[in-house]
Length: 384
Image 1 (tube, rainbow, N blue to C red):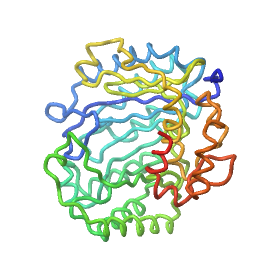
Image 2: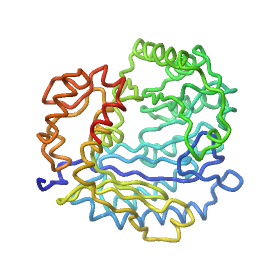
Image 3: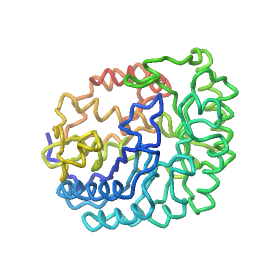
């Protein structure tokens, strides 16, 4: 294994805000309902201070790097006030500087009771929003346990644009309970017509430990799901959107934060249940934080749980699981730069996948063919 140079690898930051107004029946994320649907100022302050103490324990991981991008996920991060974020960013930047044009994304819900005015978040330094719409169909929203309506979703996108946000991702799901092709396409149409510059469009999956897993809803049959996928992709392409990752479509710049994940970059992680990945000269490590908010708050500075080096046998899958999600893949030289291992060790497998037309013939790139993307899970299994 070659010695790794962390200075060559972008460093992002993931911040987890674990609370939401109500837990949705399909959600398996680390999210917890707050009493009365509103986060108290005392709890907000306690948690923000805990985040800073957590961040202090990760300063050495930066190895002299600045923060390339920030993503605030949840839960419902927009339950935290704009003033709270402004204070948090000031404290974090004093420990590790942010790059001059650092992309800072906030996940926000459309319900007006769940956030400050969007202009406040923009003033605090957040420059990209990801609005969790999921559907513009009120009946589907009810089935999904969402507390906003079609009107709330359209209003939220408009209010974000009026506030000055130029980068707005809209999260949409398809394959919803009893959803028709027409309804799925209408969701895309409303996102496009109302000004989304980036769309995360993915199929609903039923995950263990969710209400939907225990009480299965009636989902569209495979033939309808295939039609939704095919016609939805055609609609987005016709409206100028570029599909650059399995479920990501853009009319503007790609998400710098997610791109860093997919290119096997590094990311610090603060907050209950947050997961991080850091490169040190002797290897690549993953870690996570205590999951339950009460336990996380009781352990400040927080521990780096399961701080574990990625073993040589696991590295091909770990790298390809991310890189091959990108339609264009990644430069082949990134494999050595970001894993410390030579790509020559994978020559036999790469040759086989290329001969079967599952990966592109270009030896300067690691990317799936169109056929390879259709069978991506099978391709990835070969790297295990």
